[in-house]
Image 1: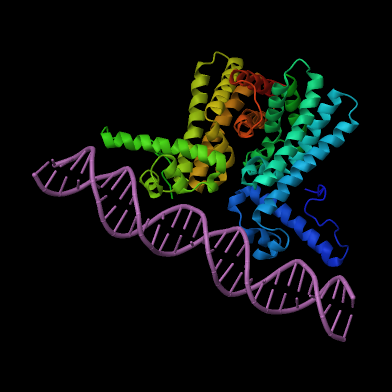
Image 2: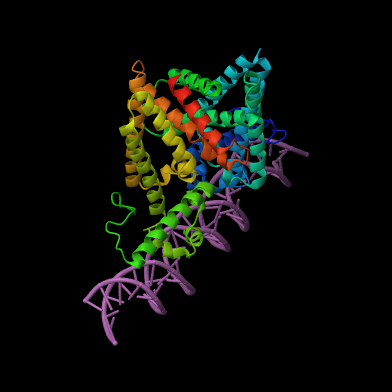
Length: 209
Length: 209
DNA sequence: ATTTTCGGTTAGTGTTCACTAACTCGATTC
DNA sequence: GAATCGAGTTAGTGAACACTAACCGAAAAT
């Protein structure tokens, strides 16, 4: 998951002490383990005890890092949507034209979906489990991410209505986010390098068709 | 529990009596309501009491129709995967050539995804919650459905490896099944007729690119 | 007309689980 | 070196919930 988006949950000023660093590490470990477990068994199928055990502490120790189970989910989803938006903006800033921009957006999203498959699976499935406040925040970040795609698409296809472009972007996300799903099914897949190319090709073709 | 893999949903011999018909109706009502609720709040977020209330009875009456909560989910997912497979076979039997077959498969899947959005959402998300026996059965049905797509694609693109075609089919399902997801987000969408055309176009373009 | 069947009811029961309480002990601070 | 802090521990606690028990009354079977 990396990035630790902005301020979010890590203390405003992480004290540079030994204990402070270990605490930050453990927090990160919990988030990684939680993403994997939530992706595998669903948010409701994972207990606080499971989260602790997964990082070598037991049960209530998790409350030293998060105010509750839903806060863990919130941190994962908020981090993911923030990373996505940040990445899109970084990518767009460097693109010389709209065609290159779309190519880069697709490539970035493919990288994210393959690299953070657990997080993607959780984001797709457990949005409704969030507390209303955080859910609204995550939705807002996601909406802004989509708008970056729509703006880019609008440059390439000014003939199409914005609602259609938005709809197409969502469909493309469904396509690109399919790997975390099918990764769970035990079917054989092409090699990782090959997958990347296929996904990029399919996404481009579907969006520009 | 459950462990009624085969005959499952419709009774072996639906007795033509009054009570028998009412029972079948109620069973169907529970399944419909359950699909909607599971799609909205997730399998674990719905109680047996909720299921009863949704059809006007209360709580334990559901056990007169299903052996337990997981049996309700099993009936939904088994019914869905069976409908999909049956539909694909019906459609393929009538197609004059591979191109028409793929067009029909896509159209059929779009219809299903738009018509049974709740079921699709549940199938995507709650497969892991099934008891192992039923999960295996559903997986098997899904696999056979995918194979229909792969066989059709293989006729059209004999140059491509089967693993690639299978992977592309999965990605296309992600694209086509995105509407039940985005239906939940409150973004404005194109009219229903328009959606159909766009999805078909995108799916075709991505598969054949 | 009598008996049986069965879909419904309300009232438990046992378990699981998020979260809290009280305490421990090494690292940090003074 | 003494005082404090805070991340960890184990032992509850209370609520939610899947499922069972016991009963009821109308439809179905005899």
